[in-house]
Image 1 (cartoon, one colour):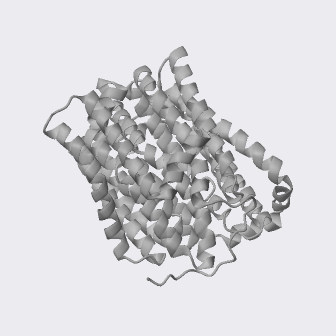
Image 2 (cartoon, one colour):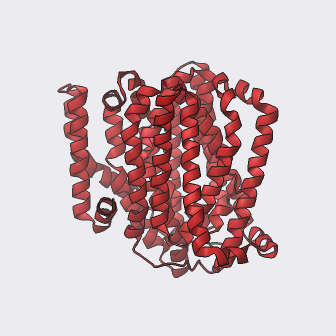
Image 3 (cartoon, rainbow, N blue to C red):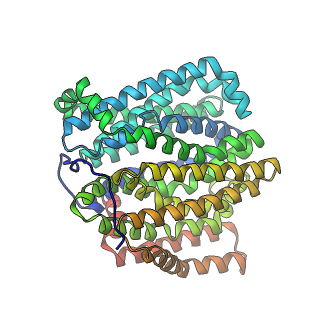
Length: 501
């Protein structure tokens, strides 16, 4: 076992609320996320027929800007909400996070007011000009939602977080459909829909937090306590902010740089392709990350961190080993059947991105170990490397006007770096280093048994798109049935959301 060296810190959190098993808490979150993603899947074919690639492209550029500003709007103090022993100290960090969100919103509004033409010019996105005034509102909603999410995670109100995710998606999807059908189907419908979805989740979670934790929050609203909390966890803004900013910039680079080098339609194809591939990450990975962060914070102080990390990683492998390779095989056919023939190009892009997002799915939940073990400087180093390699990849492809080359280099660099991140974090947690490679190869081998008929049907038998996609769905169903049979925790993750829905 590798020795784990941690920075001394105060005792772990003692969250309020009832304790449940890891799988049950993840399942609570996954319930809302399942419903949210189900709503997204149901409306996506309609949206792809109402809105064209250009509209999706403009909305994707807007969303990229929001992601970059929003991820640092709390200066990463929202992550620290999970760590203090006393709820009053956590409430002070929550209050500090909201103050920084308000400051970020004001700066965003000023930037839009003074630099709108510069922003539009740099991104070569003239259609974006009419929607930039919405940017401060979306930054405000997303930042407050981040802080509320971590407060509700600390208090283990995973059920309310689940409802919030479902409401967010339902309002956003319904608004996008309604605005697109009733008004001109341009990027404005997609942007306003997402804003309304975020606002609805803020109202729900904020109202519940205030009703249940009003007295604790009032005690946290003391400047002395807020200042002490901001000082105690200063590594989060000093390292975590830059790390998160670099990571988000590197993730959003394709959208922004493709906008600069190629047409809005190309950005739209990329946006839809990446969105479909990220569904498994949003569906389960985000729920696992939320619960894992809370469990790992406790396990680090109880000497059980290696066990928690290894078990979580093994189950992430089980969940990821089939869908990403399957999408890499049948994405063009899937996009043609579900979204229409004009979106086949998005399916080709999804094939190229699948290896990167496979390792992104694996590393995303356990990357919260950077906070648990206070390894923010390692996270910063990783994200600097990620940004540098991705800028180089996209510049090479962009200047050569070769979209596939740009995305292939982008995906390859992400695959290498995210696999290294998994390897590093497991070793720092005390997991045996040989476990990483062995576990990945073994689980991919099991998944291959379910994928072989699909490979034969496509390459040798040349099946049409519809039966090929249906066969892929059947293979996925059989694979997860087998996984649930072998592991009761996987069974809880897969079955409990269905029982709750």
